[in-house]
Image (cartoon, rainbow, N blue to C red; front, top):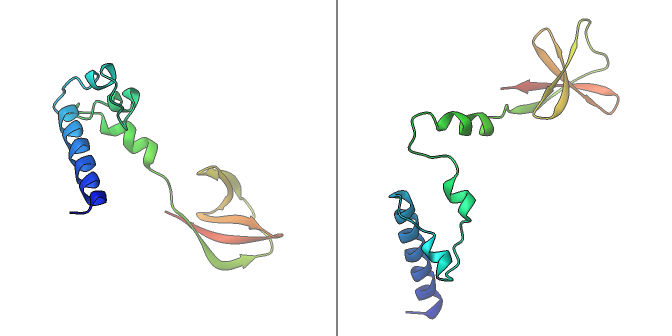
Length: 113
């Protein structure tokens, strides 16, 4: 067996064992005390308490983003009664349920899901 393949298998086995031990709640700090580095920092390993009932709510809130897709429809001016909104950090204009993005002196219709 090539040396590179053996190293990869050993690394995968070591990381799998470490992940399994952490999942079971074992004290993995002994690795740091004995000078063996870990690819996961101590803070990353302890964030979230994944087995608690409501821990998924914060994760969903941080990862849910609205999808914005541009169309091929351009207009020179906005309709009356538009409001400026910010979605995912980008400014758009919302006019009666239709969203517009300023682009080179015109406005392009965007679809927000």
